[in-house]
Image (tube, rainbow, N blue to C red):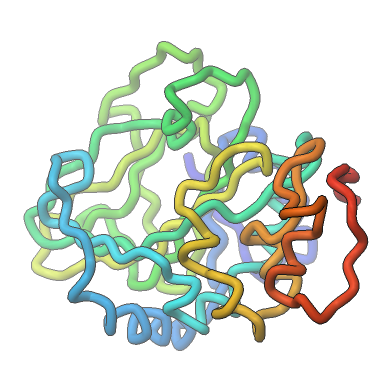
Length: 278
């Protein structure tokens, strides 16, 4: 089953880590308000004319995908560093020197959409079996998720299955959740978008996070170039990639801190070596 956790639980962080260890997933109910979800929907709807409609059954012929939600939605930026995301990422990806935001996508599953093929998100890396988790992903419920309208279907516990495992739909359960809830799951967990048999659109904001030495799913420096993000918090800029990572990756020009590209007037220490996160 999918563990269901309450936002007000004083032991929420430990509950998240336990759920991800045991089942590879969890739903955090009421992680954000309905007003926050509505605001994100309004801000991203302005870009619906450029949304991508799936060209394959995997992407969904009745599914709209709008990218670059960080620069397009100030409200999403306000929750990108949600404490539940940080707690989960630190636990699942803390074995690496750094981990970071990789991508997000506004996914609207429309009526008559068919089930998505079950997959592991970590397969994007040439289906390499790393032997450990390299991604921590999730989904904000912008609208209610139900079994009928296309709620993401998961195979709890499958993050521990062998590399050649291939579950079927009978192994899945729907991540039903109310607007404002947050689904978190590891990159090795089998899952897929659900079938929408209703006449309404299921709307969710898909999240991806990865260890710092892997290429991000979308190029954050094109989506969020230095000239456009000078008023963003340093913590968020570091989170999306304006930082050194791994053991000497990501430095800029003359061994410079990449954040100096955003704030050239500041005095940043030079050097390409990276220290492990505290």
